[in-house]
Amino acid sequence: MKIENGNIQFEYLSAVSSSSIGDDAPVTVKAASSSSFHAANAPGEAQEVSDLEQFEQMGRNAVISFNKLFA
Amino acid sequence: MKLYFNENVTDDLKAILAILEGIGFNENDMTMAIDISKLRSILNGIRQDFPHNDGLDKASIFKKAATFLVYFIAEKPIQSEITGIKNIPDGISASPNHINTLIAIFIAFESIYGALIHCEKEGDKKINNRITISQHSFIDIVDALSTATPITHFKMASVLLEQLAYKSNPECQYQPVIQWGAGAD
Image (tube, rainbow over all chains, first blue to last red; front, side, top):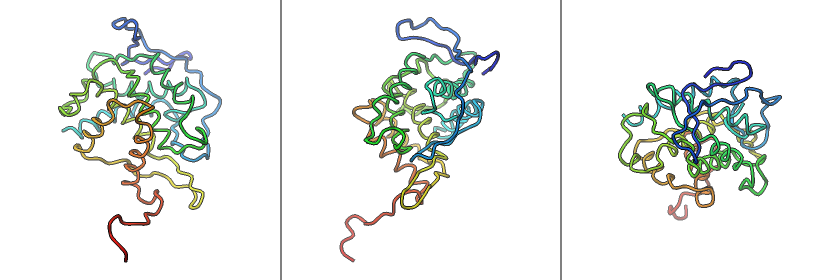
């Protein structure tokens, strides 16, 4: 995952659409984000992370967890 | 930033794509095929007509996780296999929708870990322990959820996630008051 010039490029994903399976395209989204990531005190709020790289690591950990579960 | 239900759908999309990127990291010389329009549809869908009487803001983390879970499974945004996950049991791989089900369950579990539960009587409680599960139970859960839709499975998925979280975090549940079938003391 690369974050450059206001864009995020996902290196290990390709975009397809239901109407054009097989037409791969790079997956990019604008990096511009909302003004704040403050946690609300409403019932049942998920924890927050500070940057996208933590979610990427979460995904890597997912594969490790599945491989342990299925070993 | 949270996994979903951020201030806008674009932030939700970035978070989910970052997780999928991490999963795709293990694919040798391949990329995971993602239907972005379906992913956007999921993230918009879970915000509209949220199935809770008091609305999204007052819903529990379990209802939030469950609604994401069933929308993701129903929409099937992942369009390729995930070769980095090895030895998927036959009981799971037999389902044509097992990849989306696996990833939806994983994301739901991750969103519950560390979440706060606001209890009016007992104050805030935090889900400090991750959900733990046996392979046997996991296979059954994947089988049971692989055909989930928001209409048919939301409520039961919500209860399931709640009970799985309470198994690892018993202090977070309301105090059990009876033992079924035990008779009078």
